[in-house]
Amino acid sequence: MRYIDRDEIARRLTYDRCIPIVREAMIAFSTGETRQLLRSILPLSEGRLFGVMPGALGAHKAFGAKILSVFKDNAAKGKQSHQGVVLLFEPDGGEPVCLLHAGEITAIRTAAASAVATDALARKDAKRLTILGTGEQAITHARAISKVRKLETLVFWGRSAEHAQRLANKMHDELGVETVVAPTTRVAVVDADIVCTVTSAVESIMEGKWLRPGAHINIVGSSYAGPVEVDNDTVTRARFFVDSREGVIAQGAEFLNAKKAGLIADNHIVGEIGEVLAGKIEGRRAADEITAYKSLGHIVQDLASAWALYAQND
Image (cartoon, rainbow, N blue to C red; front, top):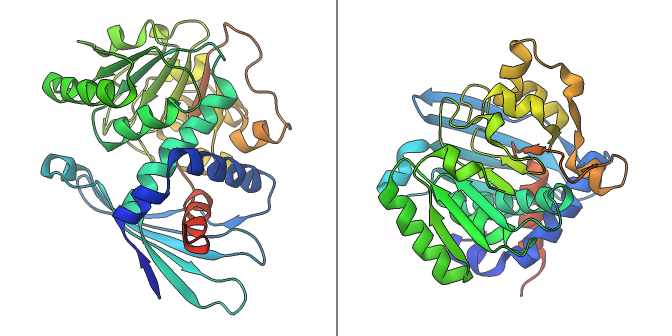
């Protein structure tokens, strides 16, 4: 069995490569070509989770699972919060053929999926990106979103102004765009064309009334029912899209909060991004419309990325 480590994934799974892979995987997911179950999440202790995500790229295509731990305090120790493996089985005889570093695949494909959603929903002239959070996904999202929009300004906010400034300096040097550190989430958000929330927040850190007309937001940080990053108003104001309708109805914390408050029903979900990409559902309808994408991530994104790395020895 082959093992593909973190360094090889980081070198080979570039955003130019991963964004098209994830785009096609999201279309396949939403057109019913793929097969998957809802993720199974086992809470271990405060801030520590163990998850299993099984799936298949099709009836006669590669299949496998991601087995993952999520330890939120790992960032303070210089470690990835997501640790684990993706296990691939080949489709003909069913043999397990490859293990891959799950943390690196998750880091890259999550941001690639947000880039796909941003490309589908954000205004074409969007040029100011705000990122709330200073962890690994802040870096990957800055890199990925810059692939689908010509950014002029990157705005960062984090609970640690020092961490935010360090990140801003890094991204300025790497991407060559103006970078700003905002003192509050409100200041960070009010002028943004695109917002990405990639925090480990337990309670809302931003309000929907701060979003300017025409803004697009990717809600990424919370991947299970419980912790939220944005308030109910953010959900209700937006034309609301998801990566998986079934997943968000079961596990999308921000959506579930607004639903529990009686503000929305399941039909508030306009559709899945894969349906927009396939031309089945209209995405943005007007320049001043606020759009939102709730990301939970699904195994099809991981498997498609992993199989491309395994099958193509470049």
